[in-house]
Length: 120
Image (tube, rainbow, N blue to C red; front, top):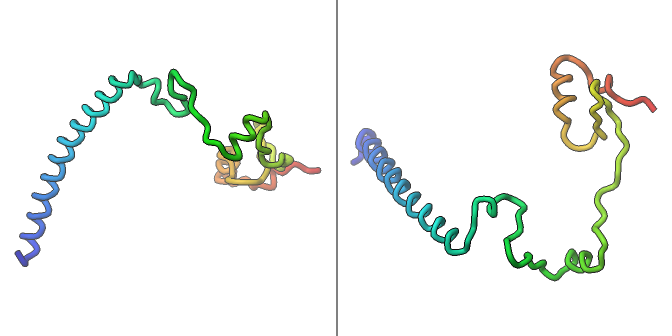
């Protein structure tokens, strides 16, 4: 087993075995998930991001944010920044963060960012 051809054939054989195991474990995992979904009454709609569990409300961990919620106050978000760039179709950008797609596509076309700067 010291030659390259033997090692490559062993790798190929092991990859086939791994693929077979993955298929078997995939089916088993799907069955387990379906069984748990049925046992708990979970639907696909419940799995959508941002959805709270049905029935009991989700409990909030007692901490700084929970205290703020109880007090009825919100955490201050970042400060508002003035718009520095205005696009041809009314788009705007403060100049912070990633360059927006509308401006990036115009720059690729040969225009400059300064052309869209708002003069104050």
